[in-house]
Length: 188
Image (cartoon, rainbow, N blue to C red; front, side, top):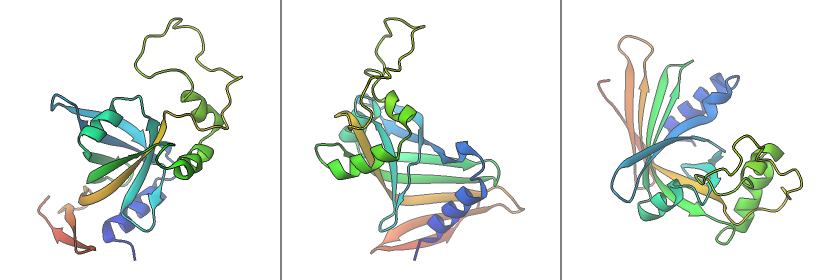
C-alpha cells in the first residue's frame, strides 16, 4: 500500500494533469562551496516498489557532480490549482549507461525525439559559437543513448506536506521508520 503522502501526491498530480507544469518541481543541491543551488526539473515517474522519483539529466550539468559529492537534496513541489506543497528530503543516486544501461534505455525511449535532441546539442553551460543558429542536428541518431545521459533516482527520506486550503490549513510531516511511513500532524 502506498504511504499517505504518495497517495496524496498522486491525487495532486491527477487533479492537475491538464497543467503540464504540474510535473515540474524544484530540486535543490549543495555545490562544492556549500552554497545551495536550485533548478526546475521534470518528474519522469515513480518506482512503485520504493519511495523513489525519477529525473533525467545530462551528466555534464552542475547538479550531477554536486549530487555525487553530496547525495542529500531537497525537492519543493507546489500545485497552484490544489494549493498543496510537498517538501521532500531525498537521497540521490546517479545512474549512467555504464552503471544501469537498461534503466537509461527505458527512460531514453520514453522521451520525445525533440527532448532527446536536447541531449545532443553540446555541453550544457558552454558558449554558443552561433547564438542565432539552431542547435538541432536533424541527422543526429536519437535512438542510441548518449554516454552523458543519466537518470537520477531520488529516494524520499521525509516529506513535509502543506495544504493551504481551509481554515486552519493542514500540515503533516512524514518520516520512515523500519520500512513504515509515519505521519505527524503539525501546526502550519
